[in-house]
Image (cartoon, rainbow, N blue to C red):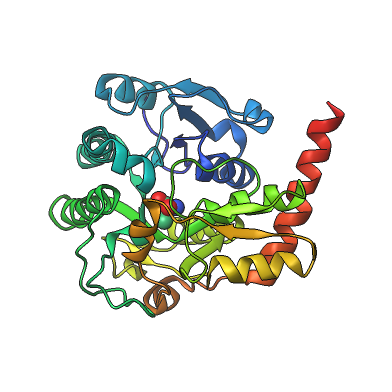
Length: 326
Ligand code: AKB
């Protein structure tokens, strides 16, 4: 089928994941649900996904990917399927395959002009212990010591290479820890900052797998989706970075997020039992300098820790009530 020059038709791979679940709803609002296809190796994660055509897709299967893209006349691919930091440390080779082979499959389709645009998420995990930890600049030392970070850094270099050598319009963001209420995160080092709200509302004490002073860059999902859409709709000539953009939202420690929850739930209790994820967190920056994203495409986050806590407590409480009444 021939691609229309005007209609953007998107395929969201990893639609049942933490970012995918929310991004697809936003794309549906912007382009119409009929122009957005959800794909995942897992079944649909939420009821809201029932408005979209759903494809069961294994990103490692190149033939299947090509067939889905041709059948739906896809112009833009959002490749969100990945193995996150904590899980990747347990399965290094599988993580490398999933995080890299899928990216090559998609970049090659863009190189061959089968699709026009690609979004691929990178992460603050591209930085390592030798990176300046505060206000980490856009361009700096990147010596990650995690499997996930190594795969993300390699992916960034390939994105830049495909853009420079084959003119591929690939765009990327180095997401910080993402905090949302629509779907559960899985396998990340920053996931404690989601789980903590569920425990607080259950009036249970929370045992944090990081120590109380571990400061990490974080962001409410709403901001992350806004950043993704802003980057993807920016004119190509404005983009000076084709590896991946730093973006910043807020940064906090487990002790600070607990204090922010205690402002609403004074009885909330937290204790600390650092595990293997502490080492991963210690290798990442504590805050991010995102001036290049701000200059190129006007990026500015809206949420700070207090607003994040208000939103999370309110929305997780609503979700729990809905589940209880079912
Ligand atoms: C993780 O913790 O692995 C992710 C990330 C920072 O990329 N949330």
